[in-house]
Length: 176
Image (cartoon, rainbow, N blue to C red; front, side, top):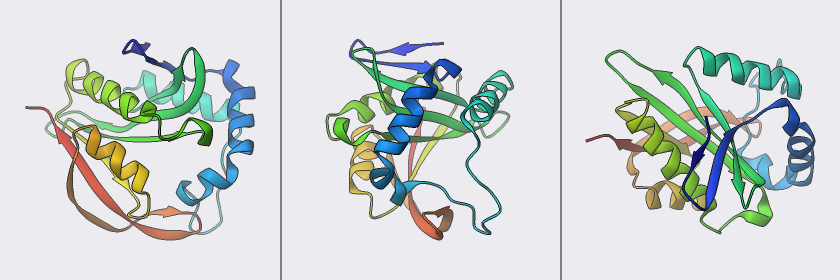
C-alpha cells in the first residue's frame, strides 16, 4: 500500500531499495548515530538488508508493523515505520522515523508522520499512537508536536541507543 498527501509519498520498502538504503546509511552515519538503536550486550548486529526487508514484509503480512520509505518528488529521503501494532482492547502502535541530513528541517517528516497517523487511525482503526524521542533530539520533538502529539511523560532508560540505555520523552496521539 502506498500513502500520499500530494507532496510526499510513503511506499513499502523493498529489495530494489538496497542501493539507496546502503548509501543513505553510509553517507549519514554521523547524523544518524546518536539516534540509532544498539544492542545492550553487544550480541546483536544490524541485519543484512535482504533479511531486514524480509522481516519487514513478514511483520506487515502478520499485521505487526508497516515499514515505508519516505519519498519527496519521487526520491527516497527517509524511512518511517508503524511498529508494535496491537489490536484487541489496546489498539495501539508507535511510530519511528529518520531522514537523510540534506532533507532535514523541510517539514517532510512532519508530513510523513501526519500521513501515517491518519492511516493508523482511519484504515487500521487504532486508538493510540506513540512517538518516543530522546530529550536531546529537538527536531524530533518538534515533529511530534507539529503532528499533533502531546507530551505524556518521560520513559526512563527506555531504549538502548548509541551504546547506552537512554531516557525518552513519550508523545501520544489518540483517535477521538
